[in-house]
Image (cartoon, rainbow, N blue to C red):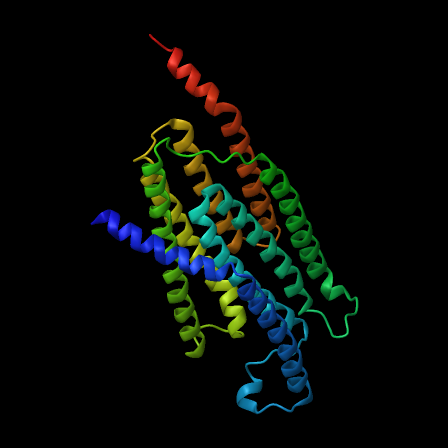
Length: 300
């Protein structure tokens, strides 16, 4: 019965993933991002000219740069969905995807600072801190990007078990967890949207999603990572493998802390998470065989 349930959930996951990864879906997402950006620019311009009803105008920002944030928020949501699908393929790949999202969040925060400038943009003493924040987030994202290039080159995907049956069962278990995350993603979205409509969250709906949404999601990712580690012990209790999986969970914790950390610290924590992941991968790649050999030669 357990295998039947895993098989059905795996089949459902495969169908959803195949639809998400199609070129048609990617084009639809790209079109949606473009439409949101252009419509956002028009609506904000209408607000600035006083052409919107008062009930609608109070929910529309005054700066055109906010339209960039709206499109960026939807892009991040699409990246989160891709992250969930990547989780079933490889935990290491999913961690890399998490770092990609962290770098994009930092880029988004750079654009967010522009909404605090005057329009058109002019230099003044009041925007010095905003410039420093932009530099911190932009260079933090760039450094994470550079580290990700190295991390991608270091990847050596190895099966957790030599048994094909055990490998397929482990992958099916990860797909079930990924499905649970997809459902959670939808539930969180409904919760955030409801809280915004009820007035419990300030700002625009896009800001509500970008702030609260990712914080809650990454908290769930921590528990999902730990659950994957515990399931993996059914197929291997080798110390390097267990430590590697728990290390990936630590990287998720650092990214989660970065989302709510003060400015400058957020970029620093993101870079730290990327460096930790690279260090963990390097040690695992070079130490797994040596550790196994030492265990086999130890006859005392």
